[in-house]
Length: 149
Image (cartoon, rainbow, N blue to C red):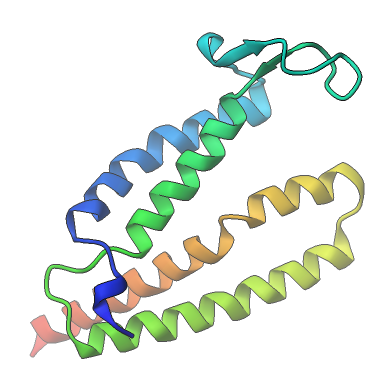
């Protein structure tokens, strides 16, 4: 894996700073129907496709914010990037894809109707979350192991 495809390390900090507010916005919009008033645009729908002619883009902003923040966290360089960290990235990505595929198959067999649609939306972030969790866990354990020596 070439490190030239990775973003600079400072983008990881930006990703962590964006993650909490966008996750809160996504939860508030999805479960409590919170909408940011200035994101409402009039005249987009004709009343037939959309329920009204006013569309609010809070949900789109929240989903894109969570996706972008996870992307920045997952694909930014570490302060010290070497071949071993590249190997850990590749292994973590492979494990994340396997777990993501298993969840997708299981969810398709278990969920129906609108719950399945919600499952698919939440599944958008699953591969990045698993990758970040596994990669950070291995990096933490490796650092702990080196400190013990």
